[in-house]
Image (cartoon, rainbow, N blue to C red; front, top):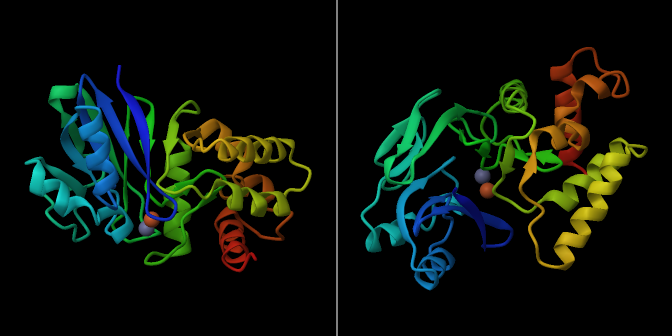
Length: 247
Ligand code: ZN
Ligand code: FE
C-alpha cells in the first residue's frame, strides 16, 4: 500500500508525496528544498513528478529536482510546464509501473485554463481547483467552466480523498459559516481544523462526501433559493463573487 505525505512549502502550499517501498511520486513541487530534504532523510527515490497547473507555487521546484533525478514530468497538455515530458488530456492514464499506480487525468479548467487533476486509488490530487471548504480563484477560465469542473470532481465516489495544494481550510470555512450559520457540519469542521492546525497537522485530506456537507461551492443546489438565484451555475457565480470580496 502506498501512503501520502504532506510536505509544507512556501507560504501555505502542500507538496504531496505518494510513497511506497522507498519510491515516490511528487505532486506539484513548488519548491525543491523541502522535497529533497525529505527524500534524502528517508532514503526515497522519486520516480515521477505530477503537475496540476502552471503556477510557480506548483512548478518552481521542478528544475532543481530534475538536476538530481532523471524522472518524467507529467502535466497538462494545454499549459506550458517547465521540463514537461508528458502532455496530458482528459481521460489519459498515467501509469507509474514501478509503484503499480495508475491515475486518470481529469481536465478541470477555471483557476487556469489547462488545469488538470489526477484521480486514482480513491485519491484525488486537484491542485488549486477544489479545496476543503472552498475552491480556487478563477484567474483564467470562466465561472461556468469552474462550476462544471467542480461538478465533475464532486461526482467522484464519496470516499475519495482530496489532496488539495493549499492549507486554506480555516479561512474557507469562515466564509462557509457566514453563508450557512446553522450548518452543524461546518461548525464541527471549524473545530476540527483549529485543533489540527494548533498541532501543526494538515487539515487535508478531506473527502468528496465530507465536502458535499461543508463546501458551499459543492452545495449550490441547496443554496440556490437562499442566494436568490435561478439555477446552480448562477448560485456558484454569486458565491464565488462573495468569496472574492470576503474580508
Ligand atoms: Zn494556482
Ligand atoms: Fe497554488
